[in-house]
Length: 198
Ligand SMILES: [Zn+2]
Ligand SMILES: [Zn+2]
Image (cartoon, helix red, strand yellow):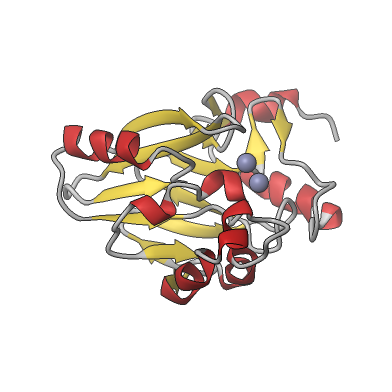
């Protein structure tokens, strides 16, 4: 069973999840902002080493990255260039992000990170991924799927034509799957699947 702590951080009210798995391993999913607050949650869960999982590289999901010292930062390779893009990422303007993309560990469709399987869900971003713990029935959906909504498709490099396929794929997961999105409240796949009309 995952132990999940949610923080809502930064100017975009982005959800950051600090998670401990059954083995005691710690993960920060989308370190949105306020590194001290994230480190405090890590301490509450026992402290020690942790890894960062990024659902995508939009600035509002990575603002605390420079204030953390994770073992690894997992990111889809299609997202790595975005870390250095000053238009997409405000901190890249300060030249900090170049270091980061060199240090990320690439993850692609089907890869495993601890209890999580990586689902590549392009649309909101070309390299958007979800982290799915099938055993625990938990999905971290980033900005692909929210409670009653989905991520913006009007931003640079969004791929609206791929978004529908990605959302359909997520809604086909078991109904009882708990979903933890990048913005807004938690939900379940069953609740979301009911709300969609095709
Ligand atoms: Zn986003
Ligand atoms: Zn976002």
